[in-house]
Length: 198
Image 1 (cartoon, rainbow, N blue to C red):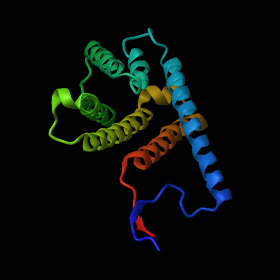
Image 2 (cartoon, helix red, strand yellow):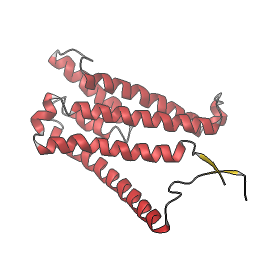
Image 3 (tube, helix red, strand yellow):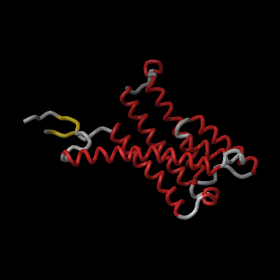
Image 4 (cartoon, one colour):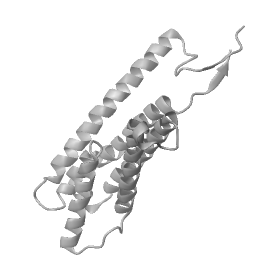
């Protein structure tokens, strides 16, 4: 009888048939999340009709911001310019406050990522495995904040004028589905697994 301690793999305790079903369902969820994320970005970009106003560039840049930090800063710039032209106050909605928090967390996550890539050059006080955990945790926080920001945008006058009825509910649920898949991937990949004895 072995008494050493080992990590328990995901899906342990399932029968062979159940395990393969679990693996294929996970793969299907990951593919669906990628397709949904890309589709949501494209649809929001089409709905905003970029170029029709300063504001029209804000949803485009911010929906692409999951791919590039520069797009997020550009989207923020268009929103600030649009508010200035319209003489409207800044940071007065949940959407804007969540957006600023998301951008701040994204900068922190990018900084952790740079430390992970160049540990010898920057000489951070934490070990590389711990930095990877911080980077992944910040990434999860960024994604959850971004999801909350996108969901709060769906309650804006602009979005409710563009999308109505059942489609609005579908748009509301899509980011939540994506968040569940991403949370599952990050926690399975980076969080310490439960130790078992055999």
